Image (tube, rainbow, N blue to C red; front, side, top):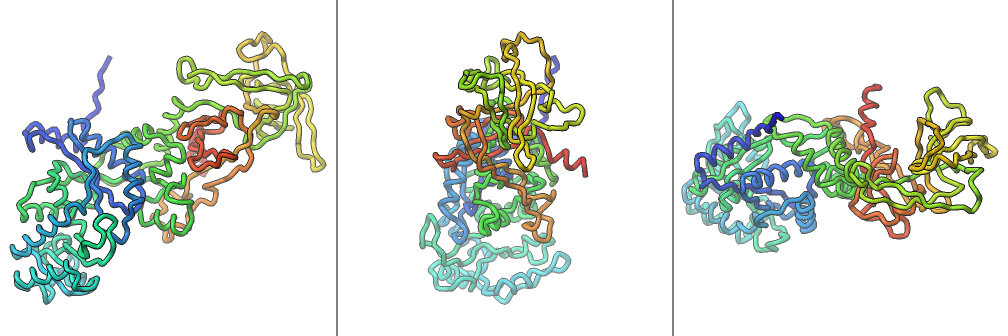
Length: 556
């Protein structure tokens, strides 16, 4: 047999070279640094799988560090949801840390830069600062405050910390190079004033470090060996390196990879927050949202998301991934793990006229035909009257229609072969009952009838059926790149949620486990909604059995 080894991605190559050279003593320490200003989405899942996966592969460790430097947008709710999502994905961090843990150290770093003549307090307005930076083709010009003395800058910065100035009155800027072609090196902001209550430090601080100042220094404080970011931080790397060099602290290194972009999806936290605040969705965990909590509620499994992240790989160039691949991964996982059950979503009654009235029998069906032994069997009650799908009957069928029609035979799943003899219609001409006869010798597993039929349909016994609500979720947007639209909300798919108030299911589904996947035979994969009321269960469709969108695209 040929042993095909998976080739290393560029980050693995870097780490292996570092280990070979004995850099950092061969130690690998990564970090996942989310901002607690929203729920994590599938793009964050890629970063989680990458950072934790790299550390696991090379016997390293991963810190969870919350980048809590903007008290206006941060909430404890977001912190808790992030921790839940990471654990659910199957990972555990080494240390739980917060950038706010380092506020005093970071303040000291700022003082050090001021003393070295590398930072100054600027009284300019945001508009004046933006104008002073110039353009990519024109150098910037110094503001009147750039040449303040070290002593004055120290005094003003301390006064900023002491709360003596209102928001926006002053900022602390690095003093680097106003003519640098990299705009991020044109005296970037290091601190701004924000009189806002922080979810961890309370009202202790009224100045907060900017991301570019807090990020690299926090990495260095923790002695992170490989700081992995997405590609938009490439132009920030020179500033990351400059600050570490000037402060003479542990030399953490930043590496960039392509972020995850999915079609038919928006991945901007700002846009996702808009969807939540404007009630286009039920909340952050709405099953149509690309958030990890939304995917979990919809029935996605940790294994399917990890598999998806591994399949798309680690690239250096931006690209858009087909959401169909994510759906393929959950189908692949659920096909192996989901228990099979029968549910009728659009019912019409089928009466077996030669089946004795009042008679009932218990049939059996395997839970999972994909596993040896079927993971056991469940009892399925059967009787004279059944619910079947309305689409499984046609009065005047086309050729190659292998379901029920006058004179045609089908097998009832796990039960008998039946032949359609007659129909009953209401005053409007709609079929309300289908009358069939069954072949007594054709019982599944004991068939001695010798009959061969091409179609098999699912059903639920009328006498034993349980009524549930079913929610059919689909893609939230009906264009491939909603973020590119003038108003992304205008492309929301009006059919992204269809609710079936009363569907009939076999009684065993009343014992459905939250978080477990079920294949409703011939209908798709479903899971019990985590917010389902006890008096009427709600099932969410995770994904259809096949990629129906791909077929629609082919038609177009």
